[in-house]
Length: 244
Image (cartoon, rainbow, N blue to C red; front, side):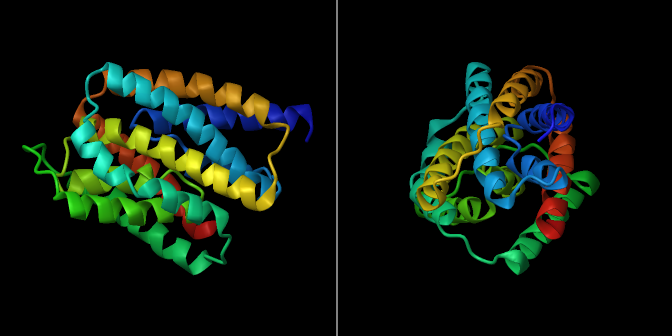
């Protein structure tokens, strides 16, 4: 990869990290789209995206926790089984094109709902523990299979089902992404023994973008603005899954 291409790729990662981190996400679906556009080898894309996810999700977790939005009672039931199943999804490499098209369409419909008729902020009613644990397990497997951290699915679900306020949904999604990305990366590297050497520049770009975006999202954005930005993120992720 030439230096010029690497600089353009790093700038793209910076933008994606800033946008996604503002809503508590880490950007894996965006990174995958950008890496594919720059013709990075398919075997390198998934581990790079997950590694960048780990970094940006770590920053987002800290920023949203510091702002006081994180809720342990909402978080742990979704996370407890998602981690081992994210490892399984990261380890298994299946031909999932039709599956990704279906998931991408769901994300686009969610984005349209957020833009046309965003859910009103009401007193949240968390799901029962068995429901949350089961949903988290499914999202963890989905995260591993798609090479994401699962927050792209968890955040809109928490908002649409009114299981959490918008800011809490973002704050819970960041550590959910962190754990699932780490588990998925471990599963992927265990299966492939591949991790690209040129990822250092991308890590630096993601760190800067993630710091700026999560600071803005956790401190300066109203719930309505977060919903609109989340819709943009869902559109990017949905189109990536459909056309990648």
